[in-house]
Every structure is written in C-alpha cells, then in structure tokens.
Amino acid sequence: MNPVDFLNVANRFHSSSDEAELRTSIGRSYYATYHVLVQSLSAQGIHFSRKGDDHGRLIHYLAYSGDSRTRRIGGNLRALRSARGRADYNLTRTIDAYQSQLAYQTADRAISLFNSISPGDIQHIAGAISASPPFPSP
Image 1 (spheres, rainbow, N blue to C red):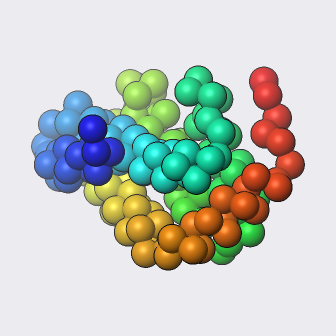
Image 2: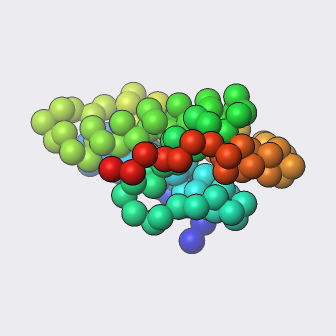
C-alpha cells in the first residue's frame, strides 16, 4: 500500500461537518506522514522495530538527522502525533474542522518537503541518523 493513500483519505474528510470524519482525517494525516518517512528511511537501512516505540524512534531519528529540513519535518510529525492522540483518545474534547485542516496541511507540507530532498541528501541524512545516539528504549 502507498502511504500517501492515507493522505487522500485525510483530504476527503478534513473539511467534513462530521466530527468522526474530522478525527479520522487527523489520524490519517499523521499516519501518512509517519509511513512515508519510515518506508524511505527503512530503504536506506535505518532500523525500525515495527513496535509502538517506532513512533518516538522516528521523531528521535529526525531530531538527530543533521539536516534542518528533516528536523522541521520531525517537529511537524511530533505535532501531528499529538493531534492524533487528542483526536483518538480524548473524546470529550471537540475536534473542529480547523484542527483537522491544520493537520492535513501540516502532513501535506511535511511529505512534500521530504519528497523534495534529493536521494543523495537522503543517504547523507541516513548516515547521520545511523551515527546518532541510540533511541532510549522504554
């Protein structure tokens, strides 16, 4: 499956009047970004355990990437993860179209920025990640 398909779902729902669809859009925005990054970095030999701690691991890797673009993407991913947590777990808090649209736009920009990075730069970033401090296991 192409993870960008998740972003297409988010696009369909991000302006909905149905709160469940708004929440779904936020979640799909996060997961589109997460999976695009994991697939690309995995292809460069970066290790992911395929467990729950990979979400924090990816943000950690991006923080130590040595590249301002991927650090920015990591900040966007952190914000999307937080928004997804609120959308999925805090059902007493109302989610509105603005929050959903913001998540969608953040994901779209992060994926576009990541895709604009040259293959050579991605290899350099992967090398910096490989040399970074280990991810602290829970």
